[in-house]
Length: 123
Image 1 (cartoon, helix red, strand yellow):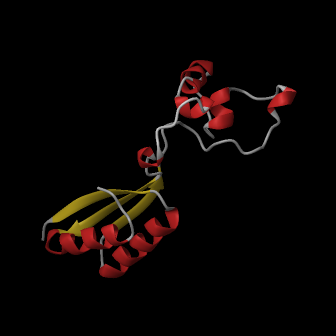
Image 2 (cartoon, helix red, strand yellow):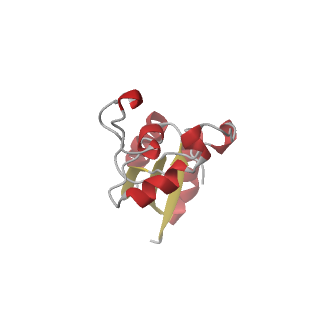
């Protein structure tokens, strides 16, 4: 019995959870759902007023990122057009923020792929 891995991205967390549940019910041995981002950390926990001057960086405020490695990373993130709002990449550019990883028997891998696609997953 040969197993293969499938990795898919989802833009909507609820759809990823539904796909994961259906894959578990199908009998997949491993189903894992994780959030992914271009930037490190869990994000900002507290809303701050930038007029008060109590923000650590533009990147942490606008990109909802945490830069534990130091100031250099936050300065580089602030260069991203998403931080300043000075450019629009369009809706089609949105990176899927949820990654679903599945370990499935090769015989039913096409069924697993159909389930993922049904909920909007991208390979």
